[in-house]
Length: 153
Image (cartoon, rainbow, N blue to C red; front, side):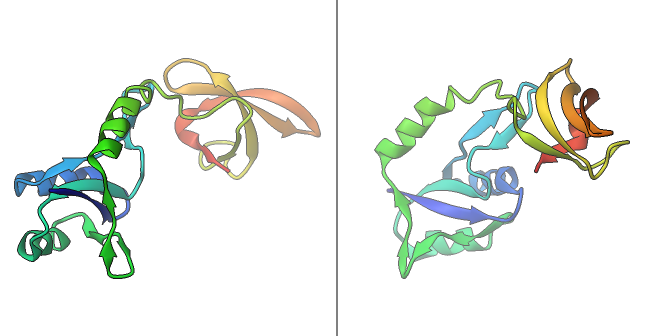
């Protein structure tokens, strides 16, 4: 039994895992949990799959919903050791309550009244809002905005 690295379609790691597990495959999707409680893939676009080497078993994976295919190095399928998977599982415990942005991180306002402007993240201000620094009239100003209006620059 080997752990293979599987490439998923964009933002479909959870869908791919569900469909692979419905076909009785063992999978591992390392996740980080945001303070909001939302789970995100630790390695976006990838999941690990435990399977035998048989071509029939691996052929089914490629046609599974959410899966693009196996990661390859030339003709060789990318594999991970059981020890690596165990280490990732232990490290995953440290990825709980991860903030969305870090202080000093440069952000872009993607929507809201400041759409298109750049900002520097200061701190969270409640569940859905934060304080950012924006250059307004050639002077840095602290502004309270929705977290959902921001994205990394």
